[in-house]
Length: 143
Image 1 (tube, rainbow, N blue to C red):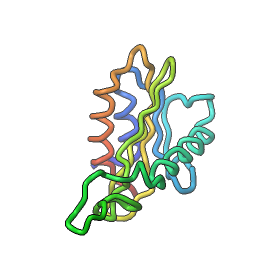
Image 2 (cartoon, rainbow, N blue to C red):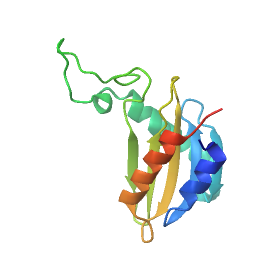
Image 3 (cartoon, rainbow, N blue to C red):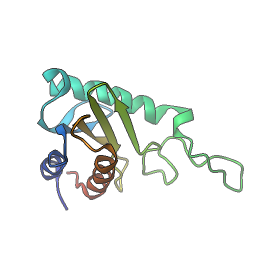
Image 4 (tube, rainbow, N blue to C red):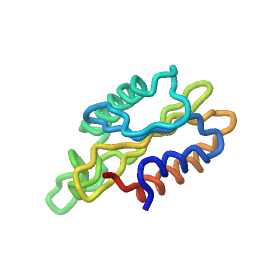
C-alpha cells in the first residue's frame, strides 16, 4: 500500500502530468507535492483547490446522489451515503491548455484529503488519468 510520496510519483508517470499534490481540504495545506504547480506556488495552489473541494463537498445540490431510500430521503449529504466517504468523488476542471483532476480519498475515518493532478491538455488522456487517479486514491495510505 503506497504512501503519499509513492502515490504522487505514480501520478507523475501518467502521460501529460505536470504536477500532483495531496491536499487537506479543511486546512488548505499540501501534505505532499511533486512536479510543477499552476502559477509556480504549490501552497497557493493547494489553498485554492481546497476551496473548490470545500464548495463541492458542502454543496447540498452537488452532494445528492439522486437515489431515494424507503423513507423518501436522499442518501447524500455531508459524509456521503456511508458517513465515511465524501459526497463527491472527483472534480474535473478544464482550461484552454490543461486539466485539473481532484479526487477525494476515501478512508475508514472521516477523510478530508484529496489528490490534485494537473495534466497538459495536449499530451494528457483525461479518461485514463481519471481511472488511474481513482485507483491510486483507493490504495493511498495516510499516516
